[in-house]
Image 1: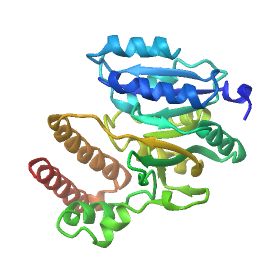
Image 2 (image 1 turned 90 degrees about the horizontal axis):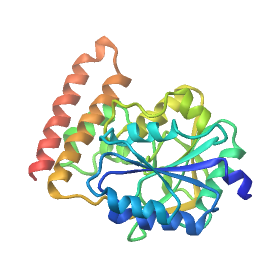
Image 3 (image 1 turned 60 degrees about the vertical axis):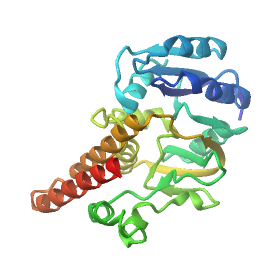
Length: 286
């Protein structure tokens, strides 16, 4: 992949009190990819802006200070809107991801190879080398209810197994229902056609929803195992973890209730809401 081709790709990450971890992310991008790649750090009103500013200066990244917390998808949308028209693909990534050599080039090649691809995702590894479930089937209402009600007391139940089913164990490129927003390359025309991420998802499920809407619009989500990144994991306090659990379950309900909005499915939506609220409280107080 030539520098010219990569020059039409931008990297966007979102920072929220992530200054201590941002340097490793920026360093990995600059060390493994072309120096022509534009990097934008969208900051959601962090308290550690001084640290973030220094890292951006050191690695020639553009800092977009949003001044408020717009959530992950909302911040990405605002960053993409600032990009010049010459940028035709955007690598969206968490700031706790580190790139392995040529990952972005490999994703870009996969996107160019398949004109129907709206998004391409890499193989994502955890810090211990295990595989992170980054390419999955779209969750269904039945699967969501079964997982919410039984996931904690019967871990091997068929609904939880299906909910957690992961395409990223495959060694070959293949389509998926959705790709993890921790790291994925999107075709800008496809992303903007859909209006980007849905801002209603403040945290979690914005990537599931994007994959679903890309598929409905005729685009495909492609898993590309030839590109590899490492996701070192979230950095949060116990209080933040509790808030994240609650946010995750609220977003899960929002996604499924929208996908299955028919009036005759109202009883199932009620069951789903009760199950998810019960599960969230259980996890928070576990």
